[in-house]
Length: 359
Ligand SMILES: Nc1ncnc2c1ncn2[C@@H]1O[C@H](COP(=O)(O)OP(=O)(O)O)[C@@H](O)[C@H]1O
Ligand SMILES: [Mg+2]
Image (cartoon, rainbow, N blue to C red; front, top):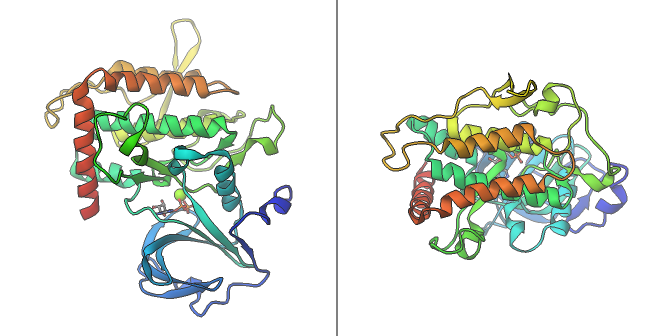
């Protein structure tokens, strides 16, 4: 923190107060069901419209700025104050530009008090990937394979972009992935190069509290230590070994596993034919006839097996972009091999949008 202190103060949207928060409405009285309370922060009024979500660390509220329903924000209130996440957001602003930027959350400002911090971010109204996964679980249905492939491509692309600019998220999981939808109808074209309406469609990674900026460390840095989030501890953490990019790669695998099987990934260490060993998910790749989904009844086992085998066994320490790109391409090639698949995907995304809105 000492290293970043002189820099963070200069970032736009940084507001520091040495006092405790003294608004008329005490922040501690805000509850999950809080609605219509108005809190004042830095001369602006935030009209609380409800709880946007609760993570392990913070309470997040949806609010209108100065009662304007067109100006919706997410207020993340944290005790004690936690400026690091804001620092990460400004790093994203500087390092990721253009259309890639919308895949990561946006922080407008932070108010730091002696007792707490309030981070003000753009609000995304469509819930998280966890909500989508839960909905399938409630319905007792598996998530359609083409949708799993779509979100896998999206996540591989996001992690590749992130690692490419020297950032690690460090807490990659479905409740930190917000859903984005295109404003216009999705077209047949533009899927592969993420252009047109496809550019607004996908996921948005938030919750940067455990983010790592690699250039604050020496080039050959590796990390020790445990994220402590059960289900998301990468193999290196489980075996008390150093890690770096693996933390996000493993998180990505767990998310994919949750989409496919609706449960956390457990790892088996298996002997391989060359006398060494391999890590693979304990849960086998399914190949059962799924009567609910008429087409694509069989999983493309080879595709998923290749993904998990490479992500869990051939993960390089330094430059993982090539692997992420290669795997992304394998999924893209598969989808492009049959024009019907893009059509199904468009229909499924449209269906998901309507069903999640009514949820
Ligand atoms: N910008 C946002 N727009 C809408 N919902 C959000 C936003 N940021 C967070 N949330 C919701 O709040 C939850 C908790 O936020 P998060 O930043 O992940 O906090 P924590 O650090 O406590 O996990 C998320 O899982 C999500 O459901
Ligand atoms: Mg979170």
